[in-house]
Length: 200
Image (cartoon, rainbow, N blue to C red; front, side, top):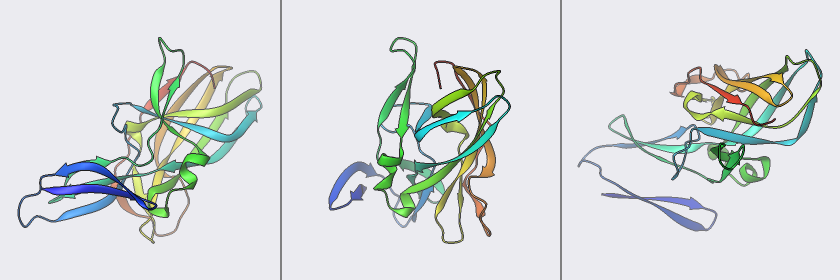
């Protein structure tokens, strides 16, 4: 049995125990943000400030995001240790979705191995100027590349606004930064879509 502890600053946060066969190796690697103790399917990222996009316009945002820690035993994923988990409700209390929450303030305190950038390309295909302060990204579509310094780099997302309070968010296969020498994926991404129907 291996005791899993997450050290944050000067404190230790117990994460449980892991059963490891005798002689087996345990590998630590970055993992896209997961749901945490509560099973959630999305990541709500708050923008540092609201953005205004004219009809037909496009803007690109580089948003800070936490990265979790995965433990592999003999090459197989054994557990994911969530880092700095907070939650937010997107939408009304009776119909909305509980999401993992991220913001610039939340991620600022994390070390370089526990944070990354999430690039969001926001396109306005509606007929009016839209104001947006957040994006809701499906967690199951996010993947992680590694930079030459072995730091985590999340895959990107695309947010297409169809109306004043409606957008489609799709995860992409490309890394969120254009970095030379990005290595193989630590966790493979996929194209997954979430529909923001309760406002931007």
